[in-house]
Length: 402
Ligand code: F3S
Image (tube, rainbow, N blue to C red; front, side, top):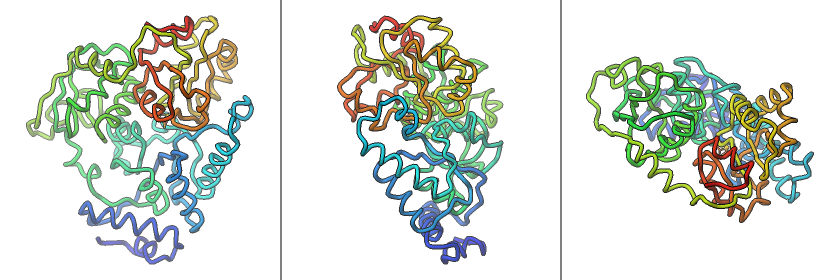
């Protein structure tokens, strides 16, 4: 691979052993993809997970003196001050663990946003920017919606890119690799962001490639895109999609496919969405123990929607709404945070469902609108029924789901 003087200096250790290690791994990754050079990035997002391997790597790089040239936003672990203040920390070891993760990323110079939807309000790229984003909903969103260019980075490769300021040039950084390959005709009616969760879960049927969706409504909201990308990437490792007439690189079918014929055509019907739902959700007609939203993190619009639907009604089951610190702050300023909290709907910043802080929910049955929320906590003994958002809100009031 051809390196510039700065890149060679990084590789030779001129900027210290941390940056050297990062560059060494990146060059190896680049060579394995046939990259001929490294190119500078302007933004990054690291899918911090606060799990053993994540903490090990962050501490290792920090101890080697690495500092991020491009300060990346980071995914949520769990919010130390929030849970401490609420008296919800059950295990001091968990607290210390999250504190160590926090300190390692702080030392590395990361932007401690603790939010998995940075592409909506904290780290928004422009069209054509070359970036390094990890996290399931983030990579498809920045590629598809903003037209920025990111390969499907892992938490580690995005961290290395943040440290060196470069990525190897391959894959989605090239025009020709960004064209659609599968035509997906959506016959199912798409009414709410929840339907986009289910559409995204159809990865098995859609198959490997870059899907080009037709038949979707003209207006696709930020929440719709967030859900579609999150579930596509979870169900089938997609790093990009197009929606004809909606996303910037798909003004029409011909452009979306780069003038070529689709390799495959797939039709998604109402029945497909129902089948996916049946496969991923626990059976209904039961009492639930709690309700959880915000995987990926909920927007202010969604918090306002819940506030409006509740209309002062007290919940019979606790509701946890996971959001960015920015959304939490807005909810506080607007006064809805306090009002909702009093009803039993808690807006929680900087937290993910796949964290040890939720161990008090072990063995319980939750209700959520997100397949991803239902998927990860299973390994912690927490299982979910999945329904659309408004059904979940009503069930939080009654305590039961149909
Ligand atoms: Fe975000 Fe954690 Fe869900 S990172 S998408 S809240 S699993």
